[in-house]
Each structure stands twice: as structure tokens, then as C-alpha cells.
Length: 392
Ligand code: NAI
Image 1 (cartoon, rainbow, N blue to C red):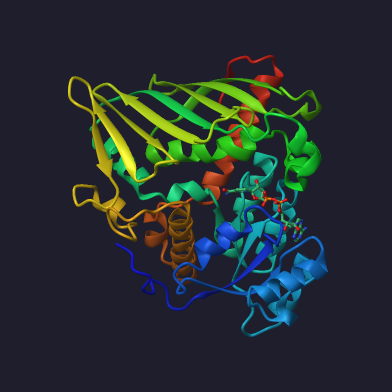
Image 2: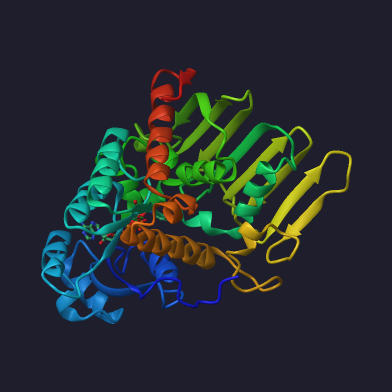
């Protein structure tokens, strides 16, 4: 169980690029990183594409005015000159900027925590992995839902055979906020999401299904997709060539099959993610709208609900428990958990503790690469008229 006590020598000197006043995801990063006050300290930033607004915002967050910079290049250059310069930066900007900012940060000797989808191509992602290895720095990816402790309970139960052989995987991340084109006209954050120059080769596949795909990998690390078929469409025609809805079927190397539904036009839907793993003996099901409960359904027996924070859960799950059973946890705690993992990874990397780094389960550069590969394969299948393609 976590209690906020320090787990690393001192708070890491941390900066943000993006995540400014009007940014959607920036506050989630700060909720996660600053939750314990012992893992990260926000000391600098280039928070906004509009420098003046970014500076004012940074000051309001408590950052010294002279460490609120006009752009990320100035941030990295000026901080490198300080003895107390930043050690790690989070990138919370639109997709099309991730690669160049991450690359510049690694070249400046910084650890990087970057938003998903990591980059546009796996070629870029492998290049950044090599650069990070050369610089001995970590690149973490903010799959922000992956810190919910019950996902580690699912992982343990799949691993120790409590559902038998995995046969079917049912994944869903859908919402209805883009059911009409009104939001495309009103929201800046939506405008770039449907512009391939900024969003990349996909909309909902990258924007939301990468989260659920990573959750499936977290829960079943042994499962590899061998082939997939993706059908993607844009119900609002002006979003083409990017999709606002996608259906994917997967075949796994062990003979299991799966499906993913990603959609931003699931009108009226107010629950977003669902992951159901069907085994030969039993099934497990979890939703992010109700993250404190895990459904365990053994064939022929009454269904069970496993509750967060209870002593009957696996120790790998309860190690990330914060508030205790009955006391509601949610997305903030999930982000706090992944940020704590980033801090532990950075500390292990700095100490050259390869063993600790290898044992830590967190969304690392490989998870980011896999998300990019997932998008690439889905798009390749869809663009061939929804054909089965080998997963490359
Ligand atoms: P947004 O458009 O709402 O905010 C982007 C922020 O970055 C704004 O503050 C903007 O001023 C700033 N910005 C843009 N370019 C910049 C630059 N070159 N230098 C400094 N600041 C810059 O975008 P949103 O929705 O916050 O998404 C940002 C990223 O986070 C995307 O990659 C998106 O996919 C991801 N995201 C992840 C979520 C998660 O749960 N992990 C949730 C929402 C978004």
C-alpha cells in the first residue's frame, strides 16, 4: 500500500511541454506527478503554443517566471545551463509534435514522459528507442488508465491460470462526444485530431484504442497478435480520411481471437473502456467507469465481484493501493501510480540498476512502440479494404 512516503532520493526536477491552460490532458499529468509531493517537483515549462499565456499559466502553477519559457528548445537549452536544471520532461502536446520534442529532450540528456500515440511511425519509435538507450534515459508513455490496481489483479489471475487458456479478448473504448460535427467547429483540440498532418494516420485508433490495446498487453503480456482485420469509417464525412469509428478483429498466436471497437460516435455512451478476457474455465471483466470492481465469472458458479483494496487480492495489485477498500479511487490515483512508476524507472536508470528496471511493469518505450505498430497495422488493413493482414 502506498502512503506518499518518498521512494526515490529526492523529487525529480520536472518540466512540461504543453499541457497549458486550455489543454485537455495537462492537469492529469500534474495530478499524477505531484500527487505525493515526493516523486516530482514542477520547476519549469513551455506550457503553451502561445508563450505569454504559457508564462502566465506557469506562474499561476507556482513555477518561477524566469523558468517559464517561450518554447521547448529554449526550455531545454536554458535549463541545461543551470546546476539545478530539469531532469525529466513531460510532453503533453498534439501528436504531430511528440517525435521532435522527445528527440530534442533526449539529445539534451533528459528523461522523457510522452503522450500517446507516441509517434506517427514505428520507424521513428525505434529510432527514439535507440537514442534513449544511447543516452541512458527512459521514455515513458502516459497510458493513464494503466495505473488502476485491479488491472494487475487481472494480470496475476490470467498468469496463474484462474481463467484457464485465453480464448477470446473483447476490447472497447467508445464515447459519443463526436456524434455530430459541431465539436469539430468549436473545439481546437478536436480540430487537430481530425487533421492527418497533426493527428497522424488515424483518429480514434490512435486517440483512444491505443489505451485499451495497452491494457490488454498489460493484462496478458504473453499474448501476441498474429493477424488482424480493421474496418474504419468516418460517419462525419468531413473527418475523412481519418476515422471516427473502427472495428478490429484479431487472431492471436495461441489460437485465441479478439475484437476491438473504437468509436467517438457511440451516441449517448457514458462508459468508455471495457476489457473482457474469456478463458476456457472463466472470464474476467473490468471497466474504467467502475475501476474498483473486477468481475470474475467462473463457468457453472455464481459470479463474483472482487473489490479494490481487499486482502484477498494479489500482492502485486495491492502494492499500488492508496486509499484502502471502500474509499473511492479513480483516474487521479491511476495517473499517480504510473507517474510513481516513471520516477522509479528514472531512479533505477540513473543508478544503473538494470534488474530493478527490468522488473518494473510500466508503460515504457516498448509499450509506446507497440501502440504505434497497432495503429500502423490497423490502418494498413483498413486501407486495403478491411483485409486480414499479418501483424508486423
Ligand atoms: P490540447 O489541444 O487540448 O492541448 C495541447 C496543449 O499543448 C495546449 O496547451 C497547447 O497550447 C500546447 N501546445 C501545442 N503545441 C505546443 C508546442 N509546440 N509547445 C508548447 N506547447 C504546445 O490537446 P490534448 O487533448 O491535451 O492532447 C495532447 C496530447 O495528449 C495528445 O497527444 C493526445 O493524444 C494526448 N491525450 C492523452 C490523454 C491520456 O489519457 N493519456 C487524454 C487526452 C489527450
